[in-house]
Image (cartoon, rainbow, N blue to C red):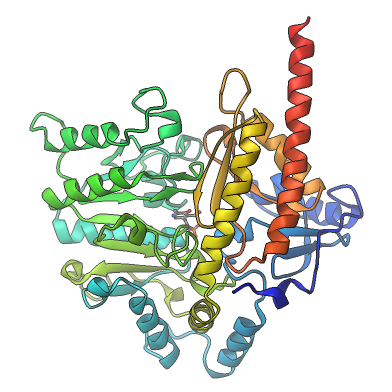
Length: 467
Ligand SMILES: Cc1ncc(COP(=O)(O)O)c(C=O)c1O
């Protein structure tokens, strides 16, 4: 069921000034003076937020945007869902922080999370609560697999993003972040991820999805392969920051078979794909595999109260007390929000909404792809959708065109981010309860901007061609 009431606060985007407007610009300049150069989002999305509600954000200058970035997938039920806000306010009166001492609300959250697992897994798994960011769950999962296996290496995939802390960065592909850091965590081996649109094995767009996994199998089983048996294989089922690339089912099932045969724990990083984003609570359900370790974070609370967890098979529970600690593991407000969010998702059939709106978006975007040469690929699951932007005629990844698109969209009231190599993928991460009117309005803006930029590209290209 769609959440009509939430977005009625704002009905559509309103653009009153150039972006950024004068008040926004002042705050951006103050931010530049006071904050670290590592800040990212306001460089590409130059807004300063006055307030936000549902699928909409209003900036300091009164401009209203549709938010299809949703805090990088965190705000799964949009901004400030009133029912969740109410539960958080209620919890504030009871207890806000409790380290890892049990509370009723934490217990309810834990049991609800376990109840969302496929029935065969429910009694086999335990939860570890981590520090508030997703990256801490990644750190914890690597530590537990190393402790359990007594091994030291980790296998990850090219294009992966698992976070910015030391070990999480080490198992991520992004070289720009890693290049300047010495002594990153050693023993990480990267294997090709089945990115069939640009086949890493150079098999010219054949969607076999198995050759890259065969390479992994051969390397791990080869007595002369040079790689010691790893403590874990860590994988995203849809590479998010890597360019919204869904792994083919066969590829993932093969990774599971190989890791099972070699007794290597498989960590499935669902920090972005989890909590309903792709239409099931966890995306691994759609791959019909049973992971040993599942990571969840971003959307656990539905409205951005930070929390991260590792769900792992009980056999891995070899930790001694204090093996992975952190002061902020007991955020009771996040637990209260998480309980309210899950109840709401179930009651309002929001996973159905994800499937319906996702199918509708994919259909409309695939139709647009037939028309516009700058759209190379449309891909995704549920409400995690990406458009790979290419240079017509050469099909080269075109981050520079995608950046123009992002700017044009913002100027017309739609907030989106980019991902992938050269930032060539325009990514859509709407709230899971987004209604059809908002989707249609966003599509209208998107279609209009893409047509305009496609036209400008082709016009200029033909001018250049004709000398
Ligand atoms: C798949 C995945 N894993 C881990 C992380 C890191 O999460 P956080 O930024 O909360 O540390 C992210 C963040 O984008 C992610 O997409």
